[in-house]
Image (cartoon, rainbow, N blue to C red; front, top):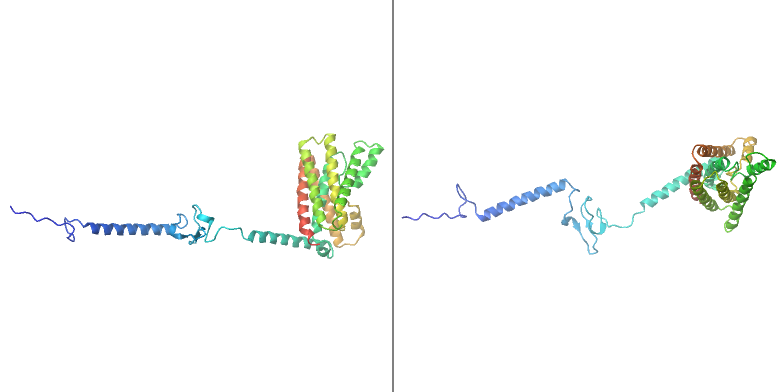
Length: 337
């Protein structure tokens, strides 16, 4: 019986019924894996930024801070050191500070132009202070609306009216009391005396004193706001507290305004303003006097509406916001004088 020849697998090149050798299968498998890896890499590059960074795209210097060599930022975890877009994490640049400085410069330039429209050489003589005094005049109208309508027909800013009310009360007029105008005048004077003693170290016309006085005034208005919100403002004890606190704050502010002596912007007294408006020829003085009158009227109107249709706390809240604005204007404009 003749032995059949044994088929030697792996040495034939192929043909019907033959299997490729192991080396051929390994090379084919390696080529397939390479093509698959290339395809995955292409898809990863197409969807750039949505896949994790590979180790080869991040270099780590000796200091341990990773620097990326790719132009996009991944959405996954940050690399070591917090480096993004090829830069180490560090303190923010000066961009925000430059923007804030530019904004302040722009606002100050606008305030100086307003000063020049109200006064001849106003920006050189008074800087940007007129804008702060205009805002303070709005506060006067608002708070005097509170004091007259809710605190017993008195004023905490206009002492002329209190002297007149005191005369009416002594004469026996109904609805008026003697103690209320006396308390307002006394606390107003105490505030002016205190500011004068504390401000002796600085020059009388130093614009920085206005920003300090407005800040102190805002603190007193904040205290009055808290009292009005927590207590019944119809009670005599509450009215006494509010009258004393608000009048003291206006005394502090008016002591500085008097020292600054910016014409026609006294923030509280309008008698001479009306006199000048009627007696003097038209000019820049006419404009600033009308502005002063209009601000006092507008503050009284809005404050009265808030007291009559809302409450005392709302009106004092508006006054506090206006004081904050006046303080900012005083700080910005103080360097201009």
